[in-house]
Amino acid sequence: MNAITLSNTNMPLVEYQGQRVVTFAMIDEAHQRPEGTAKATFNRNIRHFLEATDFVKVPAAVYREILDISTRKQSGKVCAYTKRTRKKSAEKITEDVTLVFESGYLMIVKPFKDDLSWQIQRELVNSYFRPVPHFSDIRPIPVPTLEELEAMPPQQAADLIAQVEHQSKRQHGQHGSAEMTQRRRELKLIRPAMKRVVSLIQLSIPGLEVKS
Image 1 (spheres, one colour):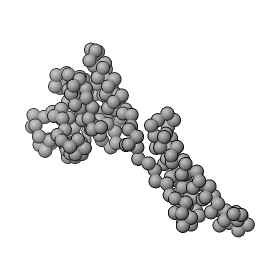
Image 2 (cartoon, rainbow, N blue to C red):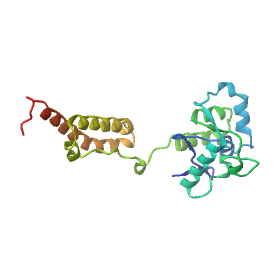
Image 3 (cartoon, rainbow, N blue to C red):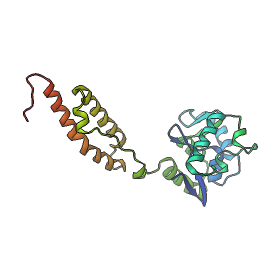
Image 4 (cartoon, rainbow, N blue to C red):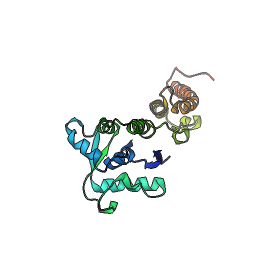
């Protein structure tokens, strides 16, 4: 999914360093507010916003790269409200661009109390900032085969399978998540691999040979 629909308007998915972000113009468009509303609210309350936590300012060149990536993902043009500018062309943007994280967005729209804003806030938080991953988007952790482990020095095999287990648990180990199904699949491969590594280490220590 490369866009979400809000009030019959397609909103592109824009990411910065792996996190979903919005611009002031995107907020205005989604909430059907006059252009400049979100920016004005931000500027009035800027003392409450933490840079790198609630927002980040990026150079024009970085923003153009973000637009380019977003465009390629969507196989078309990024919605105009991703960055409204009198210059009308992303190539002509020269000023820094403010990208707003989820916490910053919720602070900006705090004064918006109309029914539409309550609806949009829920949709943006649930569908945009915190999307439920599709199983097809979950990347499995490669688990080495028993044959590959046996071809390695025992300590190298032990270090590798320990790293694989750590990555699997970190990425797919949250209970109740869509990733947990993938975690169970990986464990079916990791557990016998760990047992084999233990056997290899025991075989390499004199006096601890494992009888077959």
